[in-house]
Image (cartoon, rainbow, N blue to C red; front, top):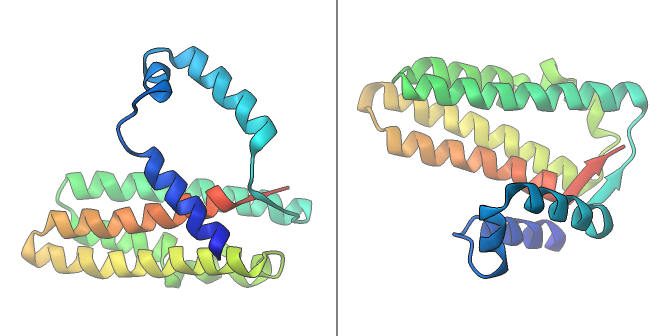
Length: 165
């Protein structure tokens, strides 16, 4: 859990406006990519989690769908379609999506911290769905965006702590 909290802190710190040596990377994207790749290959602190090949492919497919769902939610919010954003969130990311994703089958290969991170993502998506549903009446885009940011933060925290093979 401490590792997960530390990973979140590092990621959130990295979201700040670049300064010092990091500012140079902003102006030289090709160099930054090469530097980042070289550093990542040697200093990646994430925990390896071994999945059987079929479950690994299934999980990666689900994660790509999660990204697609996030993009679709953002699009619907931009259109003011709060009910549609809510529906996408609950059906594809929220607690209602666990059966669709085969969460029970995948969870047995995850360490407890990774299971907790996944549960946090699904719960935060269901919470977003409620906030977005309320926004269909109130028009509160700001609250919806804040709730959606919490969903994204759970994804980032898990990906910062774990990687599968």
